[in-house]
Image (cartoon, rainbow, N blue to C red; front, side, top):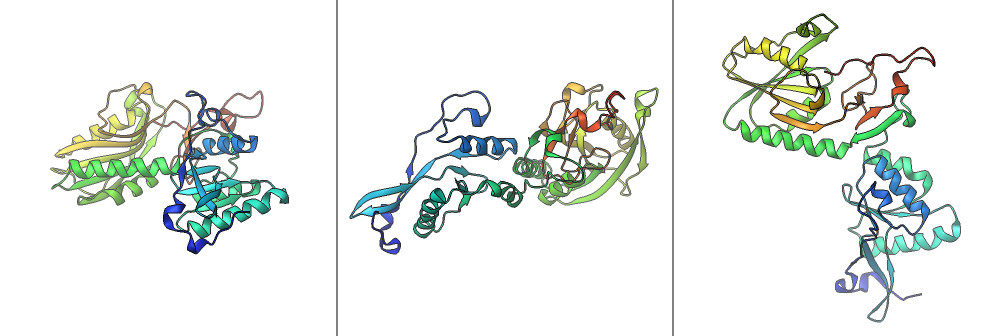
Length: 333
């Protein structure tokens, strides 16, 4: 075994070495592009891909043992999660493998105290996800197999909402706003967006009721009007999702009659392919496919709003018993 004394090793001897990419193909899901050393690593990469957690496979090797001035032993953690600045080393329950890996991880922590590294057992997968903010899949009766796909991760949501807030703040610099949220799927988005807006604003809410009617504008009515007068004011309408455009078009016609200085729309999600009427949308978070989505405020029958990500639901979630035919999910317009 290589000799070492952690505190006496000069700093220049501890320089990590960047490893060559193990990428073997450029198409397909991320876990299918890399040549892994062990099947358990590919399984974990597939798990990370499912939850849209960015990862890099064996990006760096760290010297942990020396014979004289020569590096005699290095340790290369299996994964690096850049969004959490975390190195992951996988292991199994075999004690013959756990013991040497524990020794290496201990040395790594002693020699590189600034590194965030963790030795991960299979049973730790869910615990890791919970700490990272991805562990809220078990909500009410939503099972993991009911999720078709996680479209937008918590980190992606946070990053994009902050970017929207910065752009809005720049566009309205030197002015004030009346921010109007359309209840109630917009709740989480509006709260995070409002915290990032740096210009003065008044916050108000509009509650709509949707129902099926004969004419396009019969699909929605105002159940709760805004309290703040908007004549001569700049209005920012905040929506969770825009599909057909009927809801936004209706709200625009209602608010324009009150003679605001301007009205602009910011929406977290947009489905332009479903558009029935043309509506101006100045700020868009993400464009999404036609699947029914829940999470981050969006619901199905009032459930799943508190998921920290946005995911699709499989059709089996809103189907009736076999042979009864599918139900019609609540309209997301």
